[in-house]
Length: 120
Image 1 (spheres, rainbow, N blue to C red):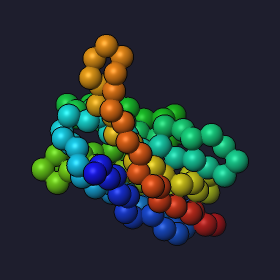
Image 2 (image 1 turned 30 degrees about the vertical axis):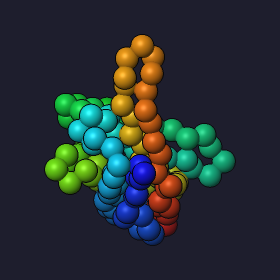
Image 3 (image 1 turned 180 degrees about the horizontal axis):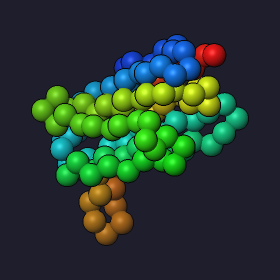
Image 4 (image 1 turned 135 degrees about the vertical axis):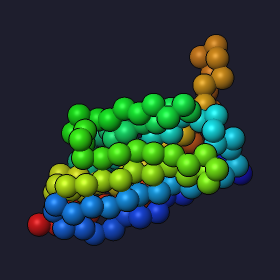
């Protein structure tokens, strides 16, 4: 059974920091590209950060320079360090993993989400 379980969400003041973790089980973790997405109230889900199997990373424009994604393949964990948090970072944050199998096929999974609330 595949599970992606997020930890670390909560309430934080604007300007503060928070680290999210996502622990994966039931998958060959180092074969998966991992990502964090978020869904703000009334908005569509958007990409926050991605990290490839080789460690290369990309960031959404809204968070670039304020967040860092990293992964620990030994611990089957992907992290999202968020700094200088803004009110508009309030969202449900989701962990996502995808493995491309070729010929357009893929295996992908979502976590259940963790709420991050930034207060003034």
